[in-house]
Length: 376
Image 1: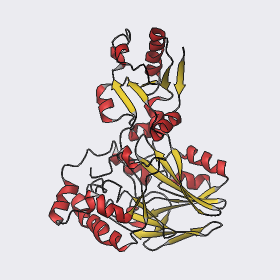
Image 2: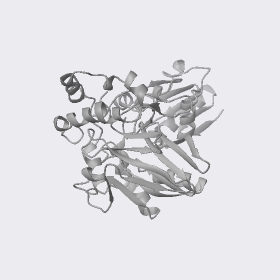
Image 3: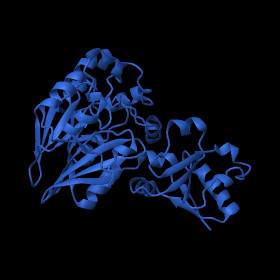
Image 4: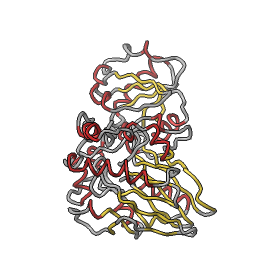
């Protein structure tokens, strides 16, 4: 019998591979109800740590005999204490999540989307703990990234492993739910940070503006990334088409929903732009384009191999947000009864503008919680 420390990467693989796991989450009830580890084969229960300080007898009858057990807390310490008690009481092997939910929130799982040629490939980084998606496009020994997150060390380790230098860092818009890693990666790799010009009015640092129709061509296979202006989530939101095959939609279009227009306080102003993008601009594009969004909301959006991708034409068949014929009904859908706004979204926006410079712990606290960029 022993207490084991389970890495967030191990939990991610269990979620993607649909392996059974029982989680005892010892955070307080409100935090558990707001955000937790989820998966098709993940079973979880919540008993706050303070109810277990004097012993774990009350939870022992509820622990399954035939599943691995993982104890989870916010930062690690409480879960180790509880897991150790369960080991002593039952004689079973029990795990605690190393780094707690902080580590789960920040883990990125790389998944290959496709080879783009003999020397090129496209990777998707899945942030299971927050529903964020970012992308690395590799060509020869050069790479570009779209919507990189602040966990730049994980991208750098992956780039070093495959032997590439990431020199083009691109954000589809000024993000409000997470802190961008684009500027940092550009500085670390002597690269270029691209941001849509219409989102950059209050930005406090140097960047390369992105305009509609602009192309970025790089690498051994000369892969081509073309900008397509697609406002609505923000006034500057810009999509990108890779090699006339993949459409990076940012927070405008997801597999099961559409982007919300209210995170800068301008929902009524941006509704018409959002509808124009989704119902006119995107319909003019090749419907065989493979959509790669910046977020997902539910785990059923992941394919069996962990990828989040769908054909644009199929989304027009199945995505409810793309099938609201009445304009007034559409307006109500995207401005009323929306989910809560992301935690600290205004502070995150100002950080991405360069107005705030939080330390690492503050950044973590700002981002804690689920993805809330979709209408539903």
